[in-house]
Image (cartoon, rainbow, N blue to C red; front, side, top):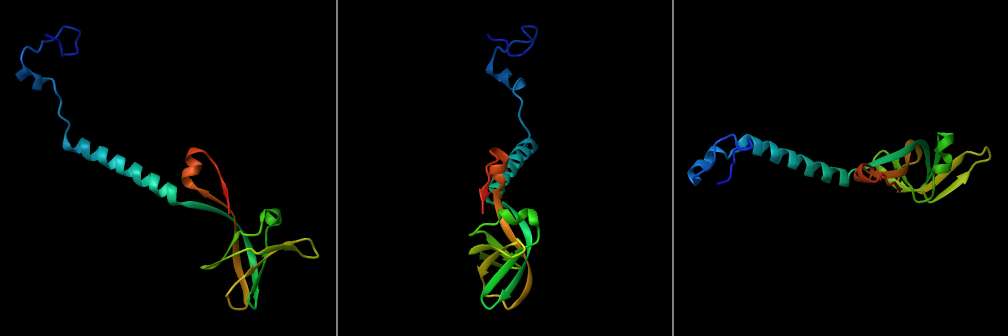
Length: 144
């Protein structure tokens, strides 16, 4: 009969199936609960990271006149990153950049259509969006 003691022949040998329970270790319910909790945490983390987007943005000032919004980019280093189709956030309102222009002093501005009331607003222009999952596994980036 095979030695199941794990001591290279120095322990008792199993001679009947009734002795097998001496060598089988039963895991407790708490071990299974911890294992299930870890697996659930991993699944929830993967779902969260697949659905969460990190936005890279630059601050801007939006001036609304009529149904047109002219957005002046506050950071000169970011002016070259802004392109048509990018998202502009003003409070809870979002709109897309329809065109880019440059003023006489060389500063870039973006133009967009809006339904906001006339006035001056703090705005953000999203120039890059990245899924958390893509950052974790391959680092690919998506432009807005």
